[in-house]
Structures are given as structure tokens and as C-alpha cells.
Length: 100
Image (cartoon, rainbow, N blue to C red; front, side, top):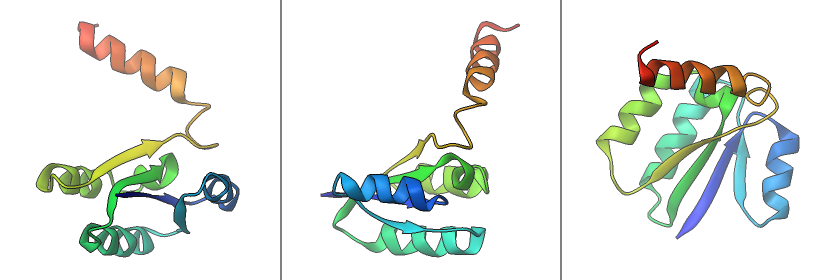
């Protein structure tokens, strides 16, 4: 089984390639959907990592994929677009959990 990264950042993609992961540079929602569909058909791919900016382009589409199939793990990986807002997202998430 292999892992694959879909990134909007060439620098992030190069970093993943340095550790031996294959990946694709994507900038539009159409490219993201096309790449995801191709990866979902590939039996060698078990883990798909998507950078935050791309993950947020169409949350409902990615959520539907995650819920409708059970052979692939799809994860969001923080990038330069997601890290700066991470503490706010975490605080908001925790407040929602405790009901405040």
C-alpha cells in the first residue's frame, strides 16, 4: 500500500517527495476532483494526504468521498495556509464540543 499527496504548494510537494512520497501539484477544484477520482480507482493507494487549502475548496465533496468508500484514508495535512489559523480552529472546535 502506498501514500499519495495532493498539494497546492510546490514546496510542500517537494518536501513530501524528499521522504519518498509521490504527489501531484493541484491548483483548481476541477484538478482536485480529477486527481481524487483517479486515486480512488488505484488499488495501490491506501492513504491520500490533501493540503489544507485544497481540502477546504470543497469540504462537502471530500466528506462524501470519505463517507462513501472505506478502502482509502483521506487526511488533511496542515500547510502554510492552515497553520496560522489552527489555534482558532481548535479553540472553536473545543468550545463547540463543550457547548459554549
